[in-house]
Image (cartoon, rainbow, N blue to C red; front, side, top):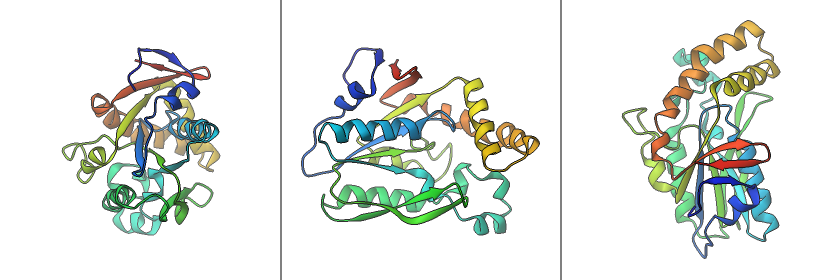
Length: 222
């Protein structure tokens, strides 16, 4: 980012993304579940687009394994943990984004919370030179979770968005309640899965290029 630590607006963060030419620039936004990665990614895309720089968000969540697969493995209750994603497919598609010339289409799956399933080709990356990749596990090593280590090397840069544990807990509870879980079910999911994932992700924080925390409408760069 090459900026001094301090509070930056989203517009300033967007201006810190290097200019690109023929090859796509892949910017990762990692962090624990509930940190606000999707919000930051979309705000960045908006600011980049406003500045005349073609950008698109490509979330990691589209690589969730389908519920029928997780059910067959007895892993549905752990959905969201590293081994409940198609890490190999995610890595393969990141490579495809890097290798495909700008202007040629690369389909990218999204995750539909309404049906709790991924949707194939939810977005198609074509003319965008900047791709914002957001997800929990972009900075993991194979020692932390097998299959994820190659991700970091495919990103030009990766920021880590942090948030206090109490904030994560409240946001995740609200997310699960909105998804029709009972309060008891939501609390159990947060305590026994989400926060455990957050601890795993926190261990990958030192591999980020920058550490950010949301403060009001801006982001504190540590």
